[in-house]
Length: 126
Image 1: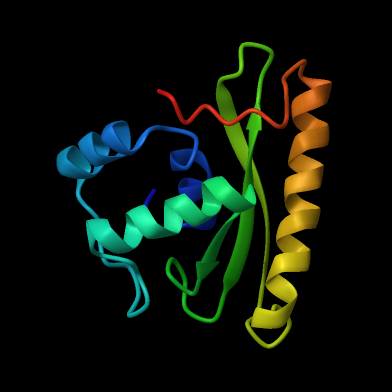
Image 2: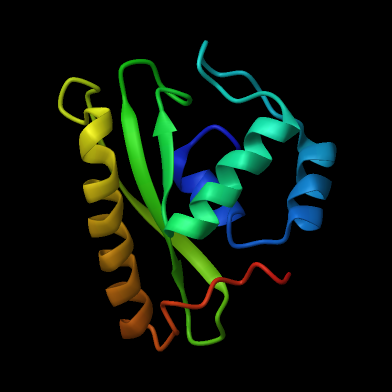
């Protein structure tokens, strides 16, 4: 969950304390040479995801694959899933990631609204 874009999008919806408990219990498995394996780096990544509304997986889960993901909430303001777009690094260049992230976050907000949720509300107080 800590290596994939969708996993990080979901984790970004929870408090630092809760995520820390999950990491303590489950660990942070190294999947590729780019996988984040320290709490400090994950915490930084999740903080950025909370701020931006989307997370980025830069070949952390699968070599030669980048991903941008955003959480989707239900009518109870619970995160129920995440959506993402993935592609080759040659197509998902660093300068395109913010634009792709905004599009994925916008689509996630539309899905959240369709489920009766409030798309602008992150559940980071859990």
